[in-house]
Image (cartoon, rainbow, N blue to C red; front, top):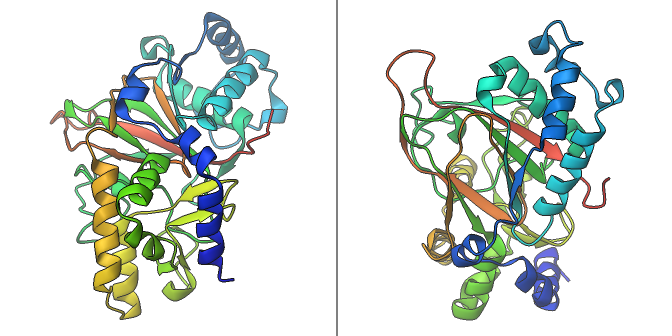
Length: 329
């Protein structure tokens, strides 16, 4: 049986799991479970650690978990991990007062928290700055993270070989206007498709080439970087969405292959359910706050934003890619 047929069968057999992980905006707004505050014990512990560190910035790229003893941070990382692998698939961390720490210290807190949660994946370095650099991903092979425009809902990484099953975004500076983070349940999207448009599912379980824009993939033929949009137990345990339409379209273009009308219609329908306002939750972040996402069960986006005109004051987020075991402690 082809892999795509196997995946479709697993999705059908796993409808109870899909139902557990599916949620709407109303569901998310009816609970604060996905909001987690860093308690005073975590902050006091981190401040004590900082008192022993001569240069926080120098440790962002070098510190290892084995070199620190931060039990309260470890407990916080476990709470975040449980939430990210739970129903909603994301967690909003608050409580880290940016006025109490400089940017280097915020970055170090973030890296330490990530190291306690899992393995940091580093094709872009431990942290990748998300800021407008004046590019447009629709006209240049650049990451959406270097632009200010609103992109379609997507998951991170176009790479077949490299899958961050969790990723984080720390806000270091919010935008002057806009830049709200948007999140939607991939499992809810799948459930809607299965109920209302099952004719589109075969195309979403078929391999599609992705543009090779992840560092380290430059020499990989684009047709070797092909995989389905929906899978089960292929890139991580259980249901998986891996999708950004633009990188599929440019992947086909690089391969010199036209996208079929059937596939285009399936992408249109998937985009529509991901964008359905009843499914989309908007989250505002202040400096020092972090969003962690399950990169397999939720898709994300952001609203377009306008920066403060003065140099060095524009919207700035730090992204981290992680490999986290669902059973990790």
